[in-house]
Length: 437
RNA sequence: GCCCUGGUGGUGUAGGGGCUAUCAUGCGGGCCUGUCGAGCCCGCGACUCGGGUUCAAAUCCCGGCCAGGGCGCCA
Image (spheres, rainbow, N blue to C red):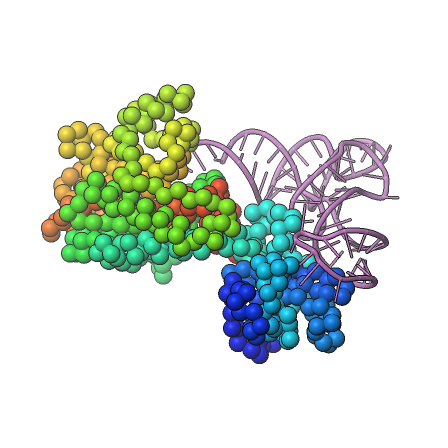
C-alpha cells in the first residue's frame, strides 16, 4: 500500500475548462461507476467536489480499461490524466485517464449509501460517521461550523479579548443546578466541568479584563431532545468594567459578524445544504421578561410571572419572533447566584437570554462583584459559601464590576445550517445513549 | 425519569396468525460508447432478543434491549 505514486496536483473543484489539455493528478474516493460497456464513467469525490473520469475503450489502453472496470465504490484511488472540456460532462470538464492507481480498497456492501439514493437514519449514520461525512451535504455543516468559530475568534481578537483555557477537571459539585459527571482523580472524586463560569470570573480579578474561551462543557442531564447534548462546545466571554447591556452589544455584533462571514465564505456549502442565510441587523429587539410572559399567554400557553420558560412557551415565542431577540429582566430567583439583581428592583435581575426563534442560544448577565452580596446570594440559593472559598477569595481583593455570556456553539450552528437535530452539528455526538464512536 | 410509536436483507421499506415475506437501493454475473437517480436481463441477501398463547407466531401477549417523536430536567 502506498500514498500514491504521484503527488496530487489539483482538488476536483480546481479542474476547470481553462486547464483543458493539461495533465493532472487527482486523488479521492470512488463515488460511483457507470460502466456502459464501451465507455466507463468513474465519479471521483474529494473534499471539495465530484469530478468525472471518462474512459472510452478506444482512447485508453486495454490494460487500463480492464483496471478501471475492476474498481469498486468508495475505494481510494489516484488518477493521472488529461483535462478535457466536454459539454456532455457534468460541470463541462472531465478527465481522460492515463494511469489509475488503486491505493486502498473499500469493503462492500457499505453500511450506508454515500450517493443517498436510499436515505439512512441518523443512528445508522452516526455509527458510520466517517462514511456519512463523505456526503457533501453533511460535511458542509462542519465547514460552516469551522468558519463560524473562525470568525468568532477573529471578531473577539479584534475587540481585544484574550483567549484563555480553564480546567475541565474540577473538584466542586456544589455549583448547583445541573448534574455533573463524576470521575476518579487519583484517590479523590472529581467532576467534568459544567461551565467555565467561575474561572472566567476569577480572571476578572486578575487584570485580564476581557477574556473568552471556546471549549467543551459536560452536563450529566438525562435529557433526550433534539437540542441537548451531554458534551457541547461553549463560546464563553467575560468582560470587566462592563454591564449586561455592554456585553449584549458585543454578543449581537459577534452574531452579525459571524453570520455575514459565513454567508460570504461558505457560499457553496450553503448552496449544497440549500440554506438561504439571512443576516440579522443589530440591535436585536429586547423583550422584557414580563412582556414575554404576556406574549406567551396571548398564544394560549399558560405561564405565570416568576416561572422559567417551558418548551411550549419557547415555541410560542418562536411563532411571534422570527429571528434573533433578547429576553431581559429575568426574575432574580430563577437565575444563578452570581447574577446581579437589578438596581431599582432587585426582584428583576441583570440577566438576559439570546433566542433564535424558539431556541435559546446564549444566556448571560452582569455578575455580582461585591463579596458580601455574593455570599448572601449563595446562601439564599441553598448553597454553602464554604465550598466556594477559592472563588470568593477573588472577590475580596479588588474585583471590578463585570458581565459575560456563553453561547452554545452547536445551537448557533443549527441557526446557521437549519439543522433540526443538534446531533447533525457534532462530528461524534455524546447523548444519553451514545458514547461511541 | 414519564408518555406515545416502532424494531423485517448492507441501507430504506411493504405486510400484520398458515405467503415461496413486497418494493427500491445495494451486492455478484451478463448486455450496452455519453452516463449524470443510467437502462435492460439473471442471481444473492432479512422478520431485535427471551419467554408465553396456539395445531401453527415475523404477525397476538409479557419482559428485556435498542431506536424515533414529544415532555420533563437543563446553575
